[in-house]
Image 1 (cartoon, protein in one colour):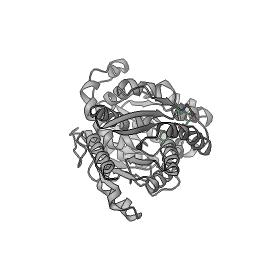
Image 2: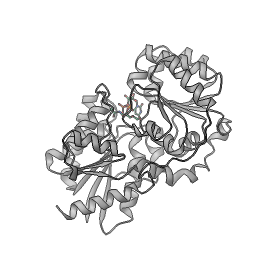
Image 3: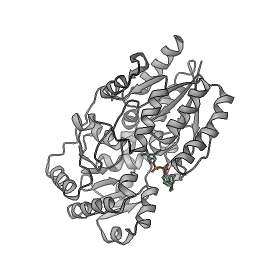
Image 4: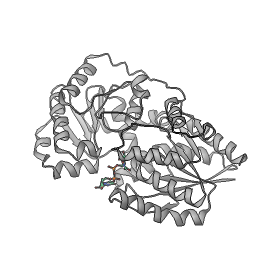
Length: 369
Ligand code: UD1
């Protein structure tokens, strides 16, 4: 029996861990899964809604760390996670993605000699001003087993000196969740509630500190959104960080004056999936949404200067547009004038079975250690 602590902390973790825990429950003779929630995200709309939508079991342990500076948050996760690991003595701790909780839990385990598996390893933006890039680099250096979503990630890890026997290209667990829930999402009434018809609107998400904590950058993005919103409504589920900075930077009046930019509360997994899956265009600074839109063939403009997910540009529908007003508008116009086939793209191993491959590898590596 392989006892695994599966760590979740922030919103983008839930849809990655859900298929892994579900797959473990289907192999009860091999796996004993536990779920630990660090509490990095705690608002109902940022956390609870995802447990319900994704049928994630209630966490066995909730560390309740909440918000704080990077140092305070990372340290709080470490202090509270260590006694859980000591008490549970798992065979593996599985961490996903690149949030502060990912690195904090990996660091606790490596010091205790507990094996760590990192899901979504090897992604690199090469931008060390991004907190997530530091979390990725450090987690990958200390993890025992590295599960990758694309072959470029394997190359990144090898170039950093990580032995090939630690790396497994398994595909994308986030796409496991997408494929599983796409039909169910059609039951969502979100479009009716918002009075929207298919492919007549854009969806926007924005939460990176580099975009929303800086008045000048945020202002340039708003200028672009203003122009784009003359062509179609832009639906903007607002992340709590962004809601706070709109007020703090004195941008509330500006945002409210843009009638076709429609601010709404953050959505749960199913409602958001239904919303973006029939959008004409998505504008985002998220990592995961670049992959989800690629998988569904939806035009995506990434409001960043780089991406850690280059396959979404090479094989998918993603365009990196940065934060220059004119560049964003030009790219949006091109996307809106182009044919939007909404063809489902299947990238190698983004097939709905990544979680099973992860379990196979965990079984195999555990048997040989
Ligand atoms: C975190 C991740 C980021 C991920 C994002 C997804 C890190 C370094 N960053 O960024 O990689 O893309 O989650 O959302 O781990 N807040 C609330 N309620 C919540 C959570 C946050 O109000 O439930 C507010 C607080 O003011 C908090 C701020 O949002 O200080 C930022 O939260 P934090 O978890 O530090 O970072 P995110 O910007 O959410």
